[in-house]
Image (cartoon, rainbow, N blue to C red; front, side):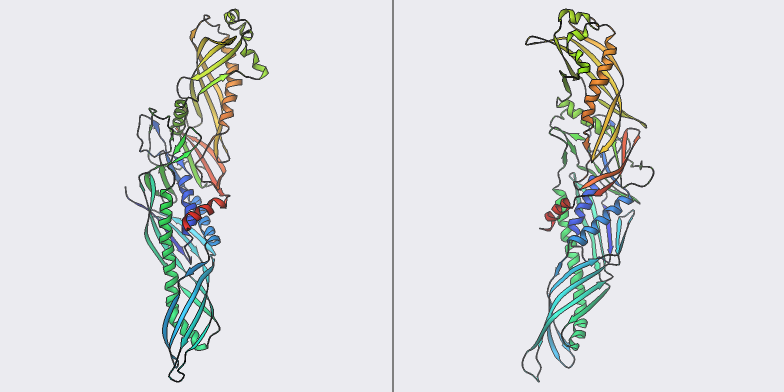
Length: 516
């Protein structure tokens, strides 16, 4: 696939040595704040992009502001190399001049903007100024005075109207995002030098002889920092894990599967996005129905559109089913339903159970017979759950299975954002019962009413206690989801949200990795 390019044109920015620090935060934000492409359950294909990062223009502005803010706060001073030169001064002769301790110690940017396009994303920081300090010294001798004459002092330099531009190419190699610095350049418009001490003839000589060299040194330092930063950032991205752990059982597959896509007002990445586990052998994978991204968010523009396809839920369902976690033994219930755990409570529902095992305790052993199947329509999300409920009688120290009922439960629900987690709650729609086997004869149909109460008031609340915890959206640590709206479309749930940067420590840690 062709290499996509992300172009940054930063006008008036006197130092991009910050780039590895803030760009880490910005790119990880772009990469890990995600939306899922539509898909459909079939058998196997690992090279599908079920999760795509769709960042709106508002989101790109957020990244740009974060990048500039972190740059200004964390990456000065910048030290430039010593400059020395021998110059000829009228009526003085040859003078050897050394400029040392050249340091950019302050940067200010008055405004900035961002403009995504077909070929890249242009970031402009305008009205920037930089302040430098340096030490100077010179020495010379003349035929009239055959001894060395020297002087020294300090000077300040103000830079205005700087322009820095770079183009970053992005492509996917072996499941990771690869960065390529395609273009890099820097230009300084105006330099103003203020000399502290020194003779008047020396000032003009210094400006005439060294303005070009100071300009070149600043431009070279900036482009050098950019190249160094891109290389370190690329190394850092290559080291990012290809899986995000969810718990001890499952992880989210975040390998990249396609090169980034650049749109007129957004940027998109694609990753695999399915749940994976050591228990995954033999589970179905999924094919995409539609590979064309769409914007589903309505109303005021949000930074991100995170949509989760049926395939994501169903891959998680398969993982936890294979791990043997969809099994529940009911041996404790609230006082209201305590009658279900003794054969006396079944006296008028299944008389033969009480007759054969009078006043014995009961356990309900519930196991899912297959992974739950999640279906999403344009107005709801629901699941069909196939389970077997075995009635176990406790007689002394012996557990006696006496009957097994196949239960097909259909539930619907709603979703909500809890912190950075996607959580939800389910409600019972309907169910069907079938006696699978019995040692005590057929059951009376009154069982249906009991099961409805049991499912609605015992099983569904238990399920909701798990669903309320949710699972984490892949948002990098230090960012939080805000102002989220949840929408349904055919086969997927869409979370339209903003994000806020709340933890500078995470960015600082990333900066340390790239600076040192």
